[in-house]
Structures are given as C-alpha cells and as structure tokens.
Length: 150
Image (cartoon, rainbow, N blue to C red):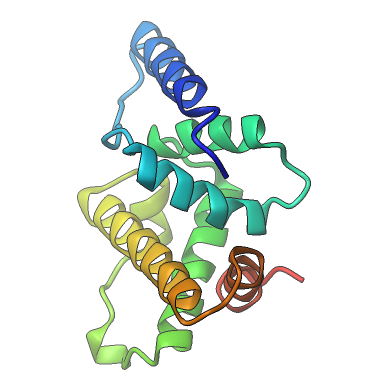
C-alpha cells in the first residue's frame, strides 16, 4: 500500500463525519492515521481484503475510523480479538472483559478493547515483517490466525 490514496482516505472520512452530523448520529471518530500508519494499516487490510483496490481499502479505513459497527462486524471483531488472545497465549485472567453489546453500542469499554487489540494486531503484523516475512505472507498469517480467513 502506498500513500497515493491518503488524501482520498481523509476526504472519505470527512464525508462520513458530515453525514453522521447531519443525521444527528452519535459519533466516535478515531484520530487520522499518519501517512506511515496509513501504509501499515493498508498493507494489513490488503491481506484481509485481497480483491479490494487501494482506493477501496482507503475508503474502508475511513469507514473503520468512524465508529459505526454492524452486527456482522461486531461478531467478527469479537472473534478476531478472541483469536488474537489465543494466538498470543493470553491467559483468561489477563483478558479484558467486554461484550458484544460493548462493541455494537460503542461503549467506552468496547471502543477501548477494539482500539487496543487492533493496534496490537498491527504490531504483530509489523513484528512478522521485521522477522523477515513479506507483507503478503504476514497479512496471510494474520488473516488465517486472527480473522479466520482462508
């Protein structure tokens, strides 16, 4: 992933925020990615969404940073976090307590867990790359181990 669509990502995010404000939706918006974070997260998402173009991934990143989560996304997020815990060997007593409702309603606990573990997954991706894996192999490893993709 390159920075080619970074400005597009910022435009899409601003458009989503504007629509949410117009509809009086409760918003929770993450800080904008830096260009380096944009590239790293884009590389990670390319492994998960193999048939997406860079432009589509940039749009997805903008959508993901405006807190609005569907039922399907909440369930897959719960599974991804639980799989991450298993993959990293987190003992049950060291896992944060959160529920599906925390994610779907965007409670403070839900947002905190979501943010923390997707940052941790991104760190895991970087560690795999630093260990010598290609970006594609690191993305595939995470897709299979964490997100349950084939």
